[in-house]
Length: 78
Image 1 (cartoon, rainbow, N blue to C red):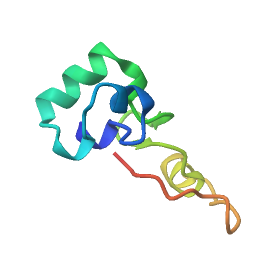
Image 2: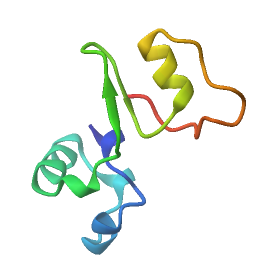
Image 3: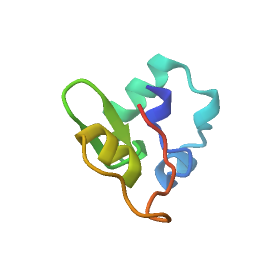
């Protein structure tokens, strides 16, 4: 779950938290209490999920041809 916490979130910074130092349980609680700290969007096919915008990962998840060069931001896959 730590990978779903947005390290650049204003809400997270306002709380004085460092995403890299969060324990799994703390990350879950943090997301439940303040969903604004979660990486968005999250796209799922019911089995796998992609967190953050990544056009190539979306295409792969959905079984479609990938984007043209430069359309992916390279965000993480959950």
